[in-house]
Amino acid sequence: MPQADTIFALATPPGTGGVAVVRVSGPHALAGLRSLTGRARFAPRHATLAALRLPVSRETLLDRALVLFFPAPHSYTGEDTAEYHLHGGCAVVAGVLDALAALPGHRPAEPGAFTRRAFANGKMDLTAAEGLADLIAAQTQAQAAQALAQMDGALARVYRGWTDRAARALALAEAALEFPDEDLPPGMPDAALAAAHKLYTDIEAHLADARGMTLRDGVRIVLTGAPNAGKSTLLNALARRDVAIVTDTPGTTRDVLEVPLDLGGVPVVLCDTAGLREAACAVEAEGVRRARAAAAAADIVLALVDGTAESVSRETPWTVYTKSDAPGFAAPPGALAISAKTGAGLDALLARLTDAAVDLTGGREAPALTRTRHRVALTEAAAHLARTQSATAPELAAEDLRLAVRALGRLTGAVDVEEVLDALFAEFCIGK
Image (tube, rainbow, N blue to C red):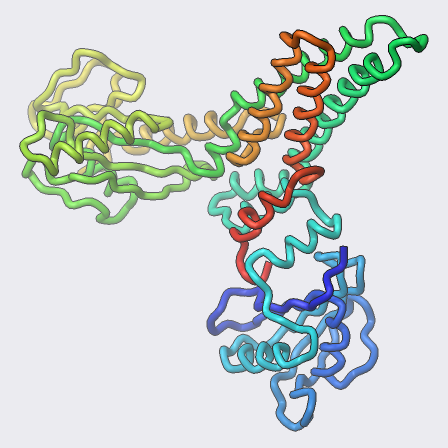
């Protein structure tokens, strides 16, 4: 599906650097390369040192750069593609971009335009494009590994397999409807329903697996407890910087403070919250409400208890006794005890949190869903598959199978994808 226009964009971060890469894709990419370099021939996929000049006067030298040409369909987008590897000065980049903009048929690219063309030209499916976006945004090794697996088709293979299974079940159901008088194998409608039920159970198990989205969004760890239990002190200690204000005045923290951490390659969002008590004012009451809401949405809740002043009536797996260095400290045998001031017990706490974060995001070979879009389409498909089991007529069961196939097809972009393209590729940077 070649595009009529040629797009260009800076593919490296803006600003001064050693090298800046400008990418061009479309039918005029080679003509533009010839215009700026004055050269007629370029060996495909070979770097060539060339002087870049304004195409009309040929007098103004823009840069001496490495240029490459990737002929269609053997390029990232599937179109003729050129790359200009420039010196990374802002003036150099601006001059080359202005020169490209003046060439016939060239226009600046919009966010995600290169990857959208790669999708349109069959170079990748939607799940691979989403994996690329996640790889660019990855901040930990585990996130990068998950994104790379998705780019390589881990999710696409699962979803295409399910689409094929649903299509085969639909074929069985429709054959029994369309050719009732033919000598067809017996039990075809029952076989279609059995296949639909098995596919439903597989999709439900996939929907129940939250590892992928947890890894992509980060494991949320929320610190709760009474005022002055040491939540903000612990947050600062684990973040290794002063994030939260720490005072002896109860109720200092009013809002939810979030700090990103990397535990064993897993992204973690550590949240400090307001102390839980009967609020003294409307502002503190709102802080307490937000604290409870954050705890309800957390993957792990650390219940902090001041070991010098409180007793706890109910231990939780994550009850942590603080201020172990202070006089009068007491905690049950074997309990988690720490001193954020001296660092005592912090290594043991971090080790337990790291193990828990890894358990929440890994441990299975099957790929997990990573996007809300996946969950919506799969939930819709599962609902249609479930309805086949209670359909009052074979025609209704076949229609639900047909709708399930369409919902599954949206996952990889096989059918009905226009409504998701703009939202997906708008997440990309300009040069992708």
